[in-house]
Every structure is written in structure tokens, then in C-alpha cells.
Amino acid sequence: MRVKGLTKETWMEAVVFAFVVGVWLLWAFILPLNEGPDENMRLQIAEFILEYGKLPTGYQKEIMDYTWGFTYGFRPILPQMLEALLMRLSMVFTQDAFALLFAGRLASVLCGVIFLGYVRALGHLLFEDRLLRWLFILLNLCLPQSSFLFSYLNCDSMALMASAMILYYLLKGRRDSFSVRTCVSLAVSLSICVLSYYNAYGFLLTACFLFAGCYWERGRKGEACHREFWKKGFLIGGLVFALTGWWFVRNYMLYDGDFLGLRTQEEYAERYALDLYKPSGRRNCINQGISLADMLFRSDWAVSVFKSFVGILAPLTEAHRAWIFVGYGLLFLAGGIGIAWECGQGLRRRWGAERKGTAVDVFQVMLHVGFMTAVLLPNALNVWYSYSNDYQPQGRYSMPMLVPFMYYVVRGLGFLKGKLEKAWGMRRNDWIRLTGGLACLWMLAVLGYCTARIMWPAYRNVEDKAEVRVYTMEELYGEKSP
View 1: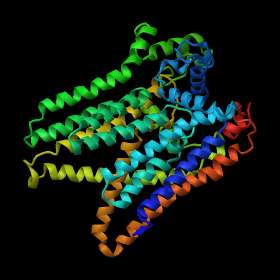
View 2: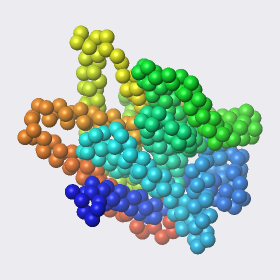
View 3: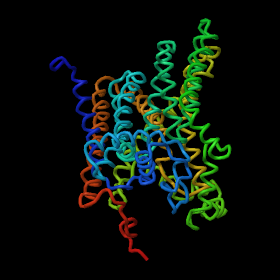
View 4: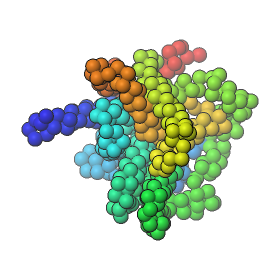
């Protein structure tokens, strides 16, 4: 069906995407400064670049947070460079403090818009079924936590954008035999990832696995591609080093050989943080003699990470909505059951008598190795950080896994859908599709609800959104302060 030259699907996408981006813009406008975690520390870096016209070092006192005793200047700051650029452009029109903050936040919104485009493209590459494509797209875009990341100053938004770009160009490279254009695009995507967020570095391994899998697959088909593999591999690696190597060389020279900057950051925290927040004084699980198993299974760590992965918005207790967590939990559970069932069935067929000796689909193997690496690595880092460094059960530390995680959720749902269609016959297929359509509408409704009933009531009466808000214990935890 076409309406004025455009398909019904195109019009539907335009309306949905306009709604989602409109929510991100509205949240960026109504959020007071520092309502997103560590936003003020990120803003200080952008303001330093604006004022001095150069990149700060981790040593700069102008960007120091004396509560925690360190700066984010030790870590990659490409997102803050983009924020500073947008703030500089906005200064042509205004000097208002909040207007400049909003301009900086547009960097995250822009990353979200690019993320949206690549997720849509990935949906078409990964899923033939229209309903599954929509589920995949909306699970990535409408999850309250991902929407929140696209509305304030942070590094996560650019890392998510880079992750979607990397996966798209890897799958595209399989189709066009990694043309030079695709290689350059993949190298740029990897470079953005490298200069955005350390927790997203699992995608560097994912890229290696999928790139190797593509050529391994071609080699097993009899193609002579050994030289091409090394030639294009060195092209991608060389471009990534050229675009990102300067940062790590700079760190090496500034921080006495600490090319990541993390060791020096810890030394600064030990020296300058308040006693309560010094690394040596933190009451982490190791210092308290709590085992890793106890932290994972006998504390609130897993539940807190799940909730904040879905999205706990605003600092008020009224932001917690059980039905949102239950709804997303059921989607994740159903997808998990479906993917586990599919894996079990595939292994049984693979090792069963009827298929012994058949060739392995090497690309699919490497795809799953790469995707699972991208899912597991940020979660492993999240677990280890809470256990050994600072107990912070936050789902945003696991957010780099978003795209491959949602791929497995939707693939599992698709497997269950196929089983139900086969069991129920064609007469009940419409009910299955209706259920899937309602799930899509529910996710959009959740995003609207979070806007109208959580974000807006929490911040509508804030007069100066450029000032950092100070909360009472009652506002934060629903109980009177001691």
C-alpha cells in the first residue's frame, strides 16, 4: 500500500521515529544539570575545551571532582569534544548557561539519531519477518535506560552508536566482500568506539571474530582470499591506529607509561578523594570478605542491575514502576527461553545421527562468538567493578551489550513464534501477530508514560536547570534523613 509515493511502512517508521526522537529532545530540555550520572564532570571537560581551546589532561584542577578525587580527563573524551563543538556553535546565538548545556546534550541526541538509523538497518539485515524487525528496533530505542542515555552528557550514547555501526558494517562487509568503502567505514566505527568508552571494547573482539568468520567462510567455499584477508585486515587496523593511537601515545607520555590512564586515575583518587571515597577505604565486597557468589545471588546486586538496565528515571522513589520492570522482564525471559530452546534443538540436530558429518556454518559460529563476547564482557566488567572496586549495581555499565542482547531476545521470540505458528496452524497466526503488535505498542506507551508521569512531574518546577540539584534523603529514598 502506498500513500503519496511512500509505503505505509515508511510512514509508520517516520511517525514512530519522530515520537522517539521527540522524547529524547524533551528529556534533554527538562533535565536539570547532573540528573544523569556524572554529567557535571563531563560538562567541566567540555567547558575546559571551550575556554582554553585545547584538551585537558587528567591533572587539570579545573575539572577535578574533589569528592571522588579524580577527573574524567584520564579517559577517552571524544564525546566531550563533540559536546564542546556544539556548545561553541550555540554561543553564536546565546550565552545562557542552560542553552549551552542543552546544546551539549544535543551530542547525545545526535548519537541517538545515528544509532536509530543503524539499528533500523540492522533490523532489516538480521530479520526477514516484519514483526521481529519492529520488536528489535523498539527494544533498542524505547528501553527507558537507552532513551535516558540519549538525553544528557555521557559517553555511553556514543558507545552505543559505535556498536550499532560496527555490527552493521561487519554484516555489510560479508555481503560486499569488505569493499574499501566498507573497510574505511568499519575502521571509523571502531575508532569512535575506542575513543568513547572502555566498557564497549568487547566490540573490538567482535569485529575480529566476524571479520575472520567472513573470510573463513569464503575460504571453505574454495575462494582464494588469504591475501585479501591480511590486506584488508591491515587496512582496517592501520586506519584505527591512525585515528586513535594519538590518544594512547599522549596518555603514555603524560602519565608515566599508563597508556589507558586508569592506574593514574586510581592514584589520584587515593590522594585527593574524601576518606569515604578513597579506593583503599571503599567498603567493597572483597574488603568485607563477601564472596562473589554471595554478591551475585544473596544480595540485591542482580535485581538492581536489571532494574537500572531497564531504567530507573529521576531520583524520586515514585519513578519506580513495577509493571514496567515486569513487562520487560517477561519479554527478556520469553526471548531467553526461545534462544535456549533453539540452541538445544540445534545442538541435538548437529550431533544427532541424521546430521553427523555435515559442514559447520563457520560464519554463524563466529557471529555467535562475537555477539556473545559483546554481551558478556561489559557484564563481566560490571560484576568485577562492583566486587573488587566500588559496589555500584548499575545497569548502565552493561548497556554496551544492548544491540547484540536485543538480537538474542528477538531471535528467541521469533523461534517461539515459529513453534506456535506450526502448532496452532494458520488460523491462529493473526493472534500471534496481534500479540507482537501489542508488545510494540506497549513499549511506545512505556516511553510516553515515563515522559508524562515520571520525568515531567519530577522536573517541571525546577527554576534554574543549569544548577546542580541537592536532594534530601527523603527525596532520594522515601524516608526521612537522619
